[in-house]
Image (cartoon, rainbow, N blue to C red; front, side, top):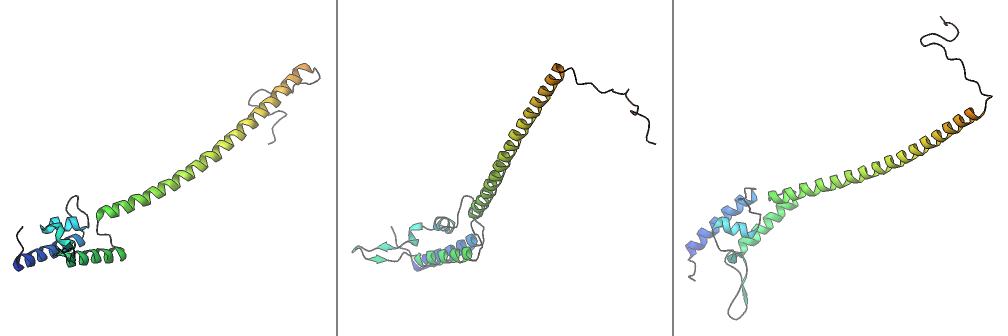
Length: 165
C-alpha cells in the first residue's frame, strides 16, 4: 500500500474535520451514528487511520488520524455531558425508554384498579345473594303463616287518603 503524502494527509484531515462538524451538528447520513465508522465513511478515509498501530518491533505508534478520533470522541462526550444528543437514534432510544416506563406505571395502576373492582364485585354479589336469600325466606314465611295481611294498594295515580294540598 502506498504511503500518503503530506498533501493527501492534509486533504484527508480537512475532510475528516468537515465530516466531524457535520456529525456533531446532528446531520447524520441515513443509518449513521455519531461514531468513528460513520466519520470515516463521510470523510472518505480508511477507519484504520483512527486507531494506533504497531511497528515491526511491536512498539506502538499513533494512527495517522488518531488525534482527530480522540478530538471527535471528546467533542461528542462534551455535547452529551451538556445534555445535547447528537445521535437521533440515541434520542429515540431515550424517548422509548421514557415511554416504556410510563406505560409500565400505567399498567401497574390499571392492574391495581382491576383488583379493586374485582373485590368490589365479589362483595356486591355476595350482598345481593344474601338479600335474595332474605327475600326468599320472608316470602316462604309469608306463605306458611296465615297471620300476615297484605296492605291495601290504592289505584294508580291517586293519593292513599287524600291530597296534602
